[in-house]
Amino acid sequence: MPGIRLESGWFRRFAGRALFVGKEKEKGLVPAAEPGKAVKITYAFLIYALICCCVAGCTEKKSEPVKIGLSINLSGRGGTAGGYIRDGAMLAVDAINMEGGVNGHKIELLVKDDQNTRKGILDADSTLIDSGVPVIIGHSYSENTMLAYPFVTSHDTLLLTPYTATTKLSGIDDFFVRTAVDNKRYGKALAKLLKKRNAERVSFLMDLSNRSFVEDYLEQTVRYYHGKYRAVRFDSRKNMAWNELVEGLLADDPDTIVLLTEVTMTGIAAQKLRQAGYGGHLAGTIWAQTPDLVRYGADSVEGMSIITFIAPNIKSHEYEWFASRIREKFNSGPTARSVRAYEA
Image 1 (cartoon, rainbow, N blue to C red):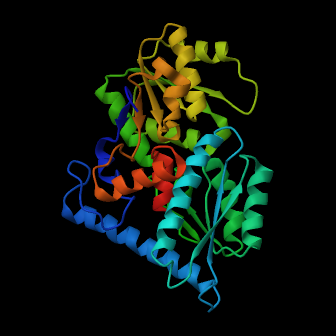
Image 2 (image 1 turned 90 degrees about the vertical axis):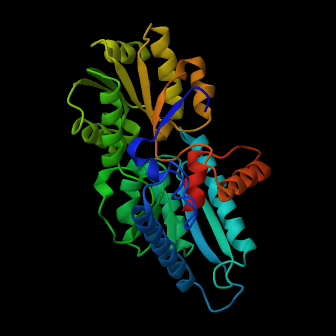
Image 3 (image 1 turned 180 degrees about the vertical axis):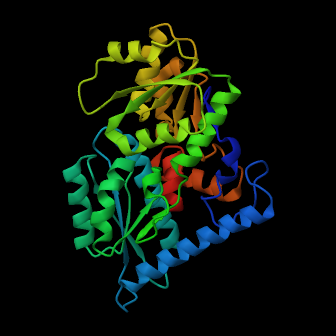
């Protein structure tokens, strides 16, 4: 994304590593041999366990497909990002099936729209479980995954999430696998960025439609950032009074404003702040890391920092293949979400 800084900081070693197990090290993106080796082994084990779980749910007939569920938001607010997730997952299924599937079984991806609502989440997951999937990949919001977790796992179904960052699910290993970093690492990275920028006063704009993510993100950040901060909360599912939100964000004359919002709200908030005369630094999260940020924010997001563990334009043959296939099949470039869906 032109003009936007992707701040991977000390966890740059994760960038691209979750994409392809066994890939060669990329200069500047991974640590020395032993930590990198450990990450590779961990992902290899998880993928092996997932494959075994799926095949175990099939009949002995080689024609019987392995069913995998994908439950994400496709039609609610932020549904465009869900489209990127679906594309990455579909490409991964195509790649596996082109190689003969899993032990002779083709993969069948069942996609359900959780609509970013409580009812939609439970209905989508229930339908997938009734279809016999041993694994559900989802959801795209921490709040939604928190809701889905007890329901999905109570049916002895594995819940695999490449997106959920809340530390409330950290350390859980019963029918739950996460392939993304959690908010503890994001909080440390953001605090490091704020210190680097000598930010003494910081405002946080927090979208409570994803409460489990944003409240936890703030909590983890202030463990390591000791300056003055103000939190301004709103719910994007309800009517928003932008004048009041902007007034609250600017009340303490902040050095930096952190937007804990999805890509649409991040772009709009950036425009509102610039229109109000704010010329300070803006920072966003991986929640807003899509090409749509420039479309919604235009010049207002120029120079914004994004805290992420997915680096853009990874230099490897595998990633180049992935990027070309995404463009060929879906007429769009790779995104952080399609990358993580492909990896999952």
